[in-house]
Length: 342
Image (cartoon, rainbow, N blue to C red; front, side):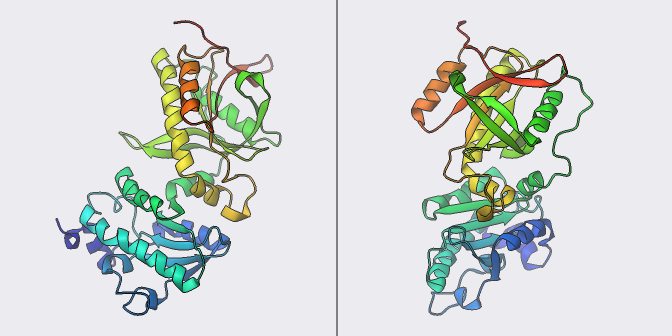
């Protein structure tokens, strides 16, 4: 299949794809930074090079200006998530836009005569296959920021805790109570490894769509941040009824979401913290992982796996906590005990 047979390109050329699905994101960007339409001389033949491919120029291209560490090129993909699939956006089509994106990015730097370190990729939702294609730009551009409706909607919930009618036998109840605590003025105190102090954490969101799973999106249970050092925290939890294998899988699940959050830290700060205007999230801090359950002991291998993970990545911090309900119906979060069983 050639690029001209790409369904996405045909629909784009025929005006069938709308910017409405991503208009809220573009509006959000415009409130934080200044979006300028691409000057025609940057994509036509002339002083800045030969004509850019039609496949790229049919997309919505803008120059992002404002704070100098967040400036650059924005490439917005019209259409909804069902249009932005590998079936519609074929590899030959992507080849016709990836290098031209890099070319236009460098033209903008010459045009503006400054660093302009960012490329923003904006769309309703992208599959992991498409994201891997865009990630190739990471080796050549200081910062590639993927902005999607999934992330935008997670930051603009009408209810700031997941409501449930379930009782404390269910994980949803514990998630609700933890989110309420995190969203309170004082936040939630989480004990760190070996009882050496606490994290004072605040809530950003819950059930945040992360990496693509076998059926739909994987979801990060609770997204929060350290109120003192402003690092992001991936907080994964399991309820009292989870089985042994489910609890053991919590480590790998949490590590996967921590790595997703680290890769998308700039996008999270831009959406949740208004980019350079916000004070809650620090781009310089590594994402922290907290694994929570309703049992005072961790699975026997957790300590060993944590040591191995932190040995490979000395900046990674992983903590194990457990929650219990006190006599007044409130919940307390405490450090897990070391499990020495085989």
